[in-house]
Length: 432
Image 1 (cartoon, rainbow, N blue to C red):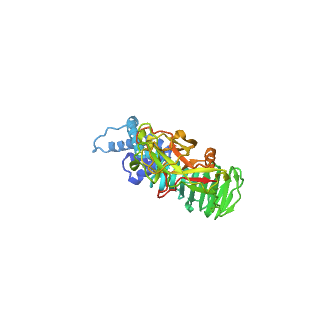
Image 2: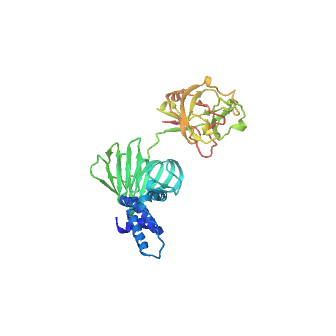
Image 3: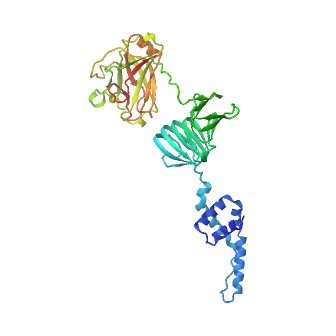
């Protein structure tokens, strides 16, 4: 320890430190073991007090002072001192360091133990962005833009691991050497902007330089592979691809659908209590099952005109439905809700009542699909041999029934877009 460092400790005991000196003392005690030991050893203070006592003895005009033994009485004082120090500096001693800040969020939905509001300071840990965009500034100066769904593990200001999804990394000169890891490799940045995509299901990671330069490493690839402007490289199942130019412009693959037939306007919903004007809508097809209040059960009836299609000419046929939000409480449903699709042969007219509608007992079950209660949007449906055979037989009317019941009253009604819906397409048969 230097004399200056010792004087800081003695100055604290004498209560003569300035605010800046007190900050220096905190840093010293946090980082220097000898300084902490010196604080406990009050022999130096004992000596200073003895000298002070002797000087008073030589001054006969001064009142006599009874010597105070620090060695015998200092431990309660030292204990109080250490408690005070821990109270003022404990945050720096025991809390995890902050390594990043959330700069902005756009329609972001998170799943994380770390704070996720803009302006939040982050320690190391994992972040899951379910939807939207989020910008994260690391203390090194590097900036990370996540495109949901994505999962990232913040390790340090100079290292981050992308578990899945897409991330854009912007690295200024202050953060050159920043490392972005993926499950099967990592990139070292040399001052640039680059994009990384990780697909954990297909076991593929891709690295694309937007501008600048990065080095990509893989345990089985040997030397570092350098990428510059507009170059892309893939690591697929442990194999590193050759460099490509313009990798960000991906080929758009065809959907494979050769023919689409949308449900006709006759498609409708029915409700057990027959109060159509109050509880049904032309915009959506409503489906619900309840053994608590069965009078509010709803089913959907679909009709397709396939007169211009020969279903026997296609290998696959899929029924596709677009889920949209509806009334009711999702928490009053099972976690997973099962829907059955039946083939029916009867026709119906407008204003259909429950009793006159086609019944399940006379229908043929063609398949089933499930929807988690947490979902309010999405595309669902079936693609089964039973559906294909039913349509190939010349029939094209379907009945949708929810097989699972609500667990408490006022459970959510499931709704699928119908012809009059302003944003989503009605039910459709897709022929492959």
